[in-house]
Length: 277
Image: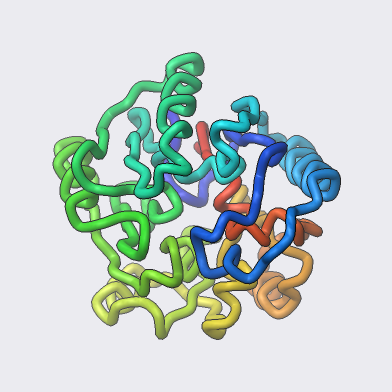
């Protein structure tokens, strides 16, 4: 078994260092920056991020950085991992095409099989969210589309999964920027940005929500990484979210990351789960 849900105990992840990362103008956050990112600062931030995983019992695998794929630090996006293997996505932007090739090769090296692939539509892993062990939400913002969701349904429904498409505004980029499950029945959300039908489903599943304002999306207020056993990685700067999580009994592991964020992704974006039990 590889990844059984989004909130069990995280045992192993795949990441890539930000050695060639730039604030490419491919999302609303990166469009704000008009200078080169500080490579030394990003290296320090990523090392602290990896150290936080290791201190919490998570084994970290690496895809070596490459100048041909500057955005591969956002490891989440090449697909989504489930119990049986992983879903291989399809990038929208040419800047990221090389990631598809190299991450697929890395997964072969790790002996984790492809169980579904998006070949005609679009799908990036920032839109992939377990709601429970058998229910997966796929965001449809800027980088994943209805055709991609249809292909994932075709591949995963025979395995017993329910796959739900969740349309959100393109400027939100990915679902994990406005919705993130951090414990079995707890999520952080910008609720006004989610479809009413999806919110009703969350109610039916008894998923309590910590709500954030729209501006928190662009400060990565929802871009959290669940570690299991009521532990969650969050950004040090998002104190209101962190205090609300603590009130819900969560152990918040604060990450002092600011430079990498300027390219448009946070801790969740930087992590591809390989094993979660």
